[in-house]
Amino acid sequence: MYPMDYEEFRWALGDTATVPLLRTVWEHPQPLNEAHRKMMRDFRLYMLVGGMPQAVDTYLKTNNFEAVDRAKRLILDLYDEDFGKIDPSGKAARIFAAIPAQLNSNASRYQVSSVIAGASAEDLVELISEMEKSMTVNISHHCDDPNVGLVANEDLCQYKMFTGDTGLFVTLAFRDKAFTENVIYERLLSDKLPANLGYLYENIVAQMLTASGNKLFYHTWPTESGKHNYEIDFLLSHGTKITPVEVKSSTYKTHISMDKFCEKYSSRITNERYLVYTKDYAKEGAVSYLPAYLAYYL
Image 1 (spheres, rainbow, N blue to C red):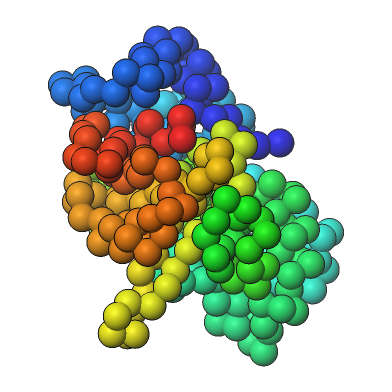
Image 2 (image 1 turned 30 degrees about the vertical axis):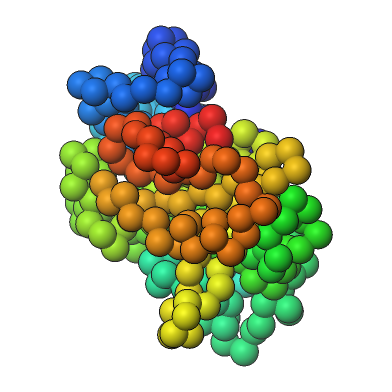
């Protein structure tokens, strides 16, 4: 079972007006101006609490993030038990626990060998597939040759891994510390998230795209100097072409990788390209700047 999506979360809070409003904005794009700030705060609440029923119920009963965090830690304990059934060796549990650190490393793939000594991605293809089937994680595979047949060009040994529920990600990132040391709750809700925690937005977009029925793919290729990589966070198949999506955890509107991608694969992409970030809706040329809550409709 997937966690509650954003619409279901708003319903649980007794709010039936927000999502229809956002759908209208999606269908008839326009800035929300003053309403945007409230929409983002509401959305950040979803990122913190998550969509697991036990966590949502605890929030509704207590309105207390520490209580919610305790509920999520119990869920993570159950995950550990389930991973033990999938893989008695403990590798699956270790792979899952390392997701925050792996995303924070800003590498172009999940580095299995840094989590399990001596292991390679090829050794764990079957285990990763089992973890994905458990719906505890969302896997984004590298697409070696971006085209409409994304699945035909996926690399099963090069992938990024996200938690299936971003609320659990928040707790997992600080699982080894007391709640009072978890800076994410306070800073994310007040929109003061440290730069090194920005991968939370990539995780929530992965979660929302999955909930919308998308299979996740990304693409990297070397820069001209060969010292770094360009990267498109997500590729979506639309009709006979593909649409690139970049995710920013800030207000920045730079999109060098997207520009290079569209230049390189101009004949393969749609007329739309999206940058998901934290500011209000905007449109500049072919690029639509989407506040994170609108990723629900991609």
